[in-house]
Image (cartoon, rainbow, N blue to C red; front, side, top):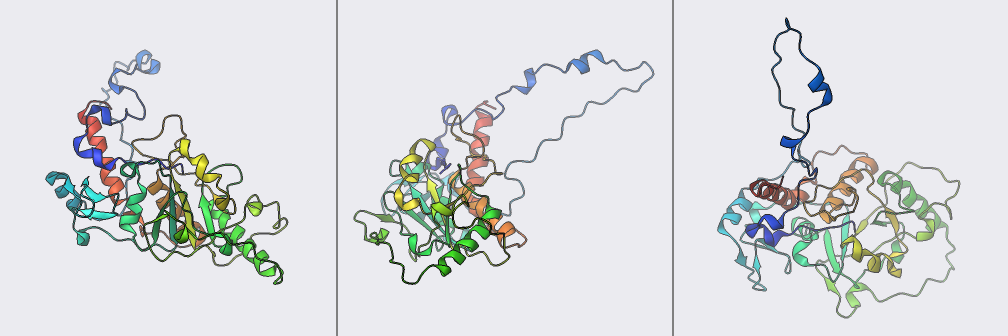
Length: 343
């Protein structure tokens, strides 16, 4: 989706060409003084004012409740190792085999999610740059990664699945609940004699399909109800449990999303947009707004909003460890930027 990706395997050999310029692009030391500061002079009888440095802003990922990074620090010191399955040179985990490398499973957090996550990955996307693997490693029981054109069949459960993707017709996470509730009402009121639509082959039956998890169940939401004009006009928000069971994300650069998002198998999905979240990704795509998130950021922020806005429950850090690898890499790469003198 707005999903750009973390370049994990390059961290250990990062040079100044591997990092981005600072977000502001400004050398503070050479910034001009304020005209007001130049014109105002202290009174002769006034006491000298001690110059104070401004209080630094909180880091973008400040306050997350994360497991200790001690295991990753030790693995980084040891350097890259070969994956026991594919033989690839990896650090922390193998993004091809979805397995840890040089890191103890007991020392890595495991996150249980309230809903299932499907990630549709573009076939041209480099595995080593994708942050989707973070979700799979940290929440293996609830996250499935598919490689396009392998897409699960969602049409049987059209009131239980949404697609997180921005654009016209997308709704907020808060609005999503009553949209799905209305769709469930319409579905139950449909004529029992209505002919079911022809079935497409399921993803696991598609030749050459790639699936990296088990236990998939399907679901979706129809496009014609997405904007709210057809079928739900005049209906109002009603209280009740959120029927959501599965969320779909697209793992791709923005230039590659068209091929996936226009696939007919995804046109039935209600689209949800994370409108208030901003990325802190170190390889953010030039020219894209800061609301275009990395895949793991989108998964994390959606679950956090879902907990607070849909389940109406206090968020106490239940899913913070989804950012375990991301936060460590964020710190590591920012240190590399500082060392390279590019802040």
